[in-house]
Each structure stands twice: as C-alpha cells, then as structure tokens.
Image (cartoon, rainbow, N blue to C red):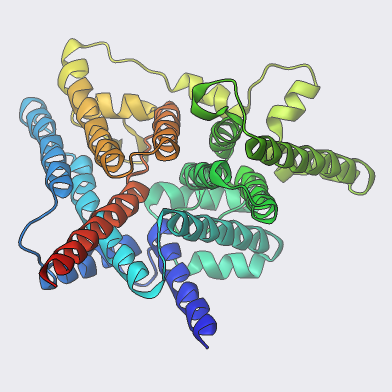
Length: 431
C-alpha cells in the first residue's frame, strides 16, 4: 500500500515538474499567465504563511543581484529616451520562478521520502524525456499535434515560426517552451543532469537505464533543436572525464565508461544500419536532413556547418558606438523580429544595456552557482556546476540563455534541508 501511495505521489509531482520546466501558457488565458508564474504566486503565498524568523542569506544575495540588474536598465532608458521593458519583466519573472521552485521543492520533500539531489535530477530528466516522447508522437500523429498546439499560447515570433515550419515536417515540437532553441537548451541541460547521475552511479542496471535515457533525450532532442548537441557533447565529456582531474580511473568508473560507450556506439551503428537497409528513403526526408545535417554535409565533403550556423554568422553584428558598448541602445526587440537583426545572446544584451548590464546578467547566475557550491561541498557537484557554466556560456553564442530555473530548485533543496537539520539539532539539544 505504501509503495502504491509513493508511486502516485511521484506521478503527480512529475506532472508539476513538467509544468514548471516547460512553462506552458494555456489558451484561453492571457499569454503571460504561464505555469511558472502560477507556481510563483502560489509559492509566494506559501512563503508568507510559513514565514520564518530569518530569510536565507542566499535568497537575499540573489534578490540584491536581481535589483542590480535594474540599474543599467534605468540608465539606458534615461540616456537613450526609449522604454523597452524586456529585462525588467525578466527580473520580475526570476523572482516568481524562484518562489515557484520553492513550492515545488517543498511539496517534493513532503511527499517523497527520501528526497535528495539525485531524486530531483531524476524528476527533471523524466519530465524532459516525457516531453520529447510526446513531441515524437505528435510528429507522427498530426491531429494530436494540432490539438496540443491549439490549447497553448505562443508569442508573436514563435507563432510566426510555427506557421512557417509546421507544413515542412522537418522538426519536432514539444509542449510549452520546449520548441526551437529553448527545446535544445532543456534537452541539452537534462543531459548534464543525467551525466551527473552517471558519474556517481556504480550499479550496472541503473547505469544502463541512465545511459538509455541519455541516448533517448539526445536523439529526440536533436530533432527538436540541434542545440541539444552542445549538452550531449559536454555531457559525454563530463561522464568520461577522469576522477579528480587526474588520468586515473577506478574500477567502477572503468565499467561505467565501458558500458556507456558500448551502448552509445551500438545504438549509433544500429541506427545507421537500420536507416541504410530498412529505410533508405529516410535519408532523403526533411526531418533526417535537418537533424543530421552536420553528418550529411561532412559525408559530402563540406565543412562542419549547417544552414543554421551559416545564418548565425550573419548575426554577429557588432556595435559601432562606444556608448552602445557601455550602456546599450535600450532595445531588445523590434516589431517582427530582433533589434539589429541579431539573436546572439551576448549581442542582444550589449545592444540592450551594454557590457555593464551583460556582466550583471551573469552575476545573477554566479551568485546562484556560488551559493549552491557553499551547500554542496563535494567534487561531483563542483564538476556539475562547472559543466553548467560552460553550457550557458556556449549557448549564449547562439541566443540568450540561462539555466536559473534549475538552479532555483537545487538551491531551495539545499536551503530547506539545511534548515530542517538545524531545527532537528535544536530539538535534540532541548530533549
């Protein structure tokens, strides 16, 4: 009975993680009423009800970093005489996302025993795998895809892209923000979470299961957005990297790495053979051509590039004014597209509020990483945080990226468990 109850709790919590991660805006509600915002409001109310004598220093430091981000916003508005509130609403959203993560972690600790970092990562990985599976099913069942897209709201740019691409049948679309670049970010980052678990794992069956999950998300994520390759590459290096930055491997690590590589190679070989001998026409399909464009162009003797990377090169439009470099032009979007026709994350921030604002954008993430590291003083988490930082820095070469929503979950888990330990220690002293 207890096992059934635990499974049921895990199922509805998985649904909540799904809604939090993919930040869905359901029709007919307004576009800005997204699931993370709803969780955030509920989390704020819950936090006020459960208000404790002191607020965690980590939360205070985070709030200060968010408030500092508003300074270059105000400066660029005053100097340039324009008002584009994109990063102001971004700052407000970060506060609500933080409180939404608080709600989710509190529920997880209440209904899943024991709940730790490994369990948290598994919930996220399963949620991403589920959305990737749903995206694949939607692709082969167009009526389901039409229905799922109809019950959601999309911003103007995403809606225009969907209208343009849907009839082409060359990529998968998940629910919520799990489309285009963000779909690749979420799939790619879940691979880093899987890599973290694989590095710690020594049991053969669990290693095999995590490897299969890694492979499934990497392949299906590739059909959503090729940005997934960044997470797959970093995740693979992360898994195979020697322990303690040395060239030594333990026996358990050797077994894990051998199993991971064997499954990876076997799956790749089987996939190529299956396509060549059973579905040779698949190589000419738009969706295979899109996902495997790197491989196809290399096989044809072309450079290691895609149409997307070729187009990305044209988006590196550098500012020609020192004032823009310093405080920006105060613009993020223009009607029908991006300001200065660039989607590059670093450049969009520079054009909005200069290098100063861009640095403060990364200060928020640095604060989160530093506070998490204070709670988890072990090499596995340190390596994971380093891999996360590399992932974010690389993705901003393509578009604006952060993984704050995941950091909030990790931070709240550490804070709440620390507070519970302190309370239990006080109770023990009073006995």
